[in-house]
Length: 458
Image (cartoon, rainbow, N blue to C red; front, side, top):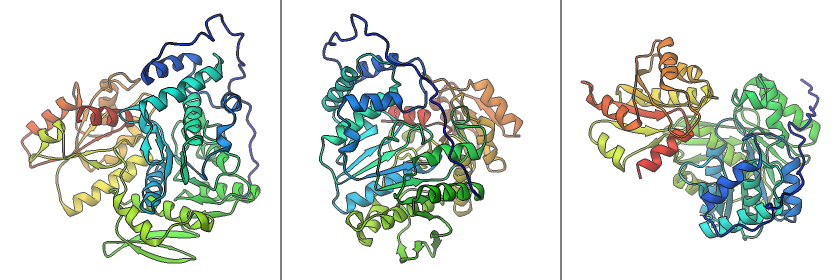
């Protein structure tokens, strides 16, 4: 299949208005939350995909995106955060200093910007945000764009060996897509999500995400639907990017309790990944394929890969909660799990993981479920038909989330037993009060819900 690269006009052509008398008045010293709240007011739209605004700001800052350690740019619908986490763990196992940029955060904003292995400090974040705010001079810019510029500024001024950059939304017009020559681009599984911004069909979404592919830069492709795989292959060929595609150039599988990775360079017999679930084999494999596609100067040993697999951490991705108030409430009475996946594709992977758990250690499965309004609640819950015993629907305070009536109706339409709860704590108490054997409980449906749970659980 041949495809023509699509050109799209920017969604917003507003340029900076004339500066008001107060635009250049310096603000008193503030904490990062105060500055971040102020930055929300610079543009009326939370999401407005184009590159004009962020490129203008980066030019004013001296083009920090051109002064970074080698960049691995990671996009996709699901698994991109996990693939980044594996790469980070593997490089750190090799003693490398790693910059990492991810979004959204779970508990506090500083999680998004990791400088040479450490979350950015409050003082450093404040300095970078204030410099970006001053350079922007009151012009329209989205919150994600100006905070991405702050991250790139921090990365450019802090020594490190590698930069891992996660796409925020889409690819072609995402604020991270400003690196002219990354060391590699990575596209994890693509599926329907954010249709109001990226397009209504899988082909349109895939084309947006293919926008990060660069001429002469290796492209690593995770598991994809056939149509998407062909489309990405065609874009890579058109741009002169050498593609390394799952199922064609590399593969992964589990054998006798071991993780097997195989490509034309040979076979690696490794321990199972530290992140839980069958889908993590592909995410870990994507990281390994990326490492093996890079120039020799950026590769690491097989032993470092193995150590990274064992030490990887990525909160709210099928995470077992064993400490904190919620875990103490469930201790001895239930298994308590947390996951931030929020679309049907993520739910399908989670339900397979839970089905595998059920085969090994049967327990009644209960969901505690909350979801943002722009997500497909019924599509997500459909993956748990025949698997979940019961769904407790909860609000997500402070977020533009589905109300519990809507979530309840979505569950009931699928034939799932459901009830409403005022909070995660109330839902957990109700589940534990039911006369049954010790249940398995998954808190799910939103990274924002997961972040609130992690914060409240200490």
